[in-house]
Image (cartoon, rainbow, N blue to C red; front, side, top):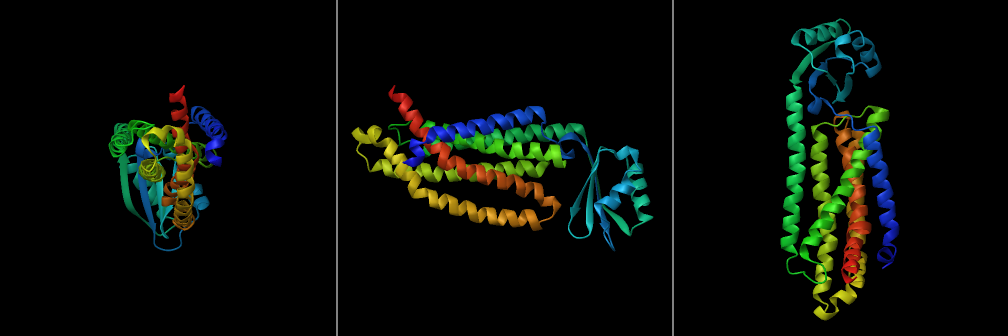
Length: 299
């Protein structure tokens, strides 16, 4: 019951955190990669010693037509160069220039136009919204027999609130990392958001399902009176499961972030932030909100 009795503390903490992140998003925004803004990608494979990013930057800075580029390692012997859109001739100029100093070949070259980037943005937003709608409908259906003292659709609504909270946290992390480390959001980030969506919803439903089971043991005429105690008991019964599951997941994601290379670092970082936020919201936010809704309905 400690969590339920002190729920206003957690509401305040979450509200301040979300407000700060929204302020950062309006101030700094998010740095989108070429997947969304359009641009070019060149994958360079080195047959011998792979140069450092500093050495490559010295070479690439000579080409004014790729200003604002970024480099990421891919495996042990490849580098991925992302820049604004360039022509085949300009790409050949870059590769030829690097071949004067290194044993390197072009493994891949692709251009993504701005229209395709905008289409990807639209589809990404649509995918998230569609997933949320289907989840609300599923939860409302699954909890259709739990109408006292909270209607089934409110379980779905609170689940969405918890997910939006969990979505804001990775966005804030990427806003900060984009400002100070140049970290860009690419299509893998959208994949990470959908994974976070599933993880967050699953963690929240575990607690809600235990609430449903415990409510079934309470007579109908006492459900409203004992609802706070039922929610508190359900949290206590599932909190160790949630923390242990999240901890083992974080161990794997941390290993992926450290040893997985630059290609998967942004993906794993988004998941780490999302898993932490999801664990927090399922315990300290979603279930206490049920209690607050129930108390509001009494007034």
